[in-house]
Image (cartoon, rainbow, N blue to C red; front, side, top):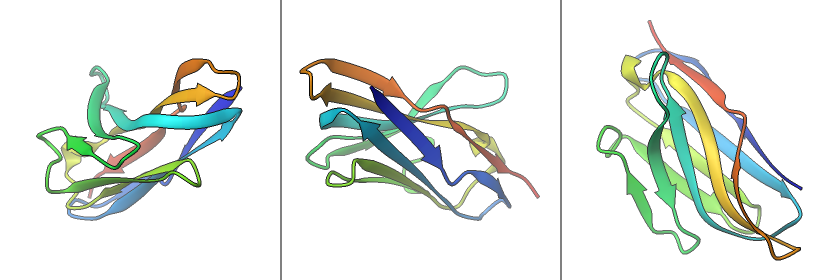
Length: 120
């Protein structure tokens, strides 16, 4: 099986920074697009940023210029550097990945999420 585990969430003051990390493990042959989503309190889950295997990135308008997504294909990890954080960035952040397993199955996998709280 495949597992995604996020880390790096926590409490930060407005204007501060956090870096989220997500590590994929298990029966992985390769990982295609990886992404970060978030779900603010009382709201639906939304896409934050994506990155292809070759490093092409895309961002939600609300985070452009403040967040940076990156990945390490050798380590099956994806990072989200979050700068200039705002209270409206408060959410549970989820890692997502499109994975080709060693058994030649394609899977879309989710982590369990990590909470980011931006508050003074």
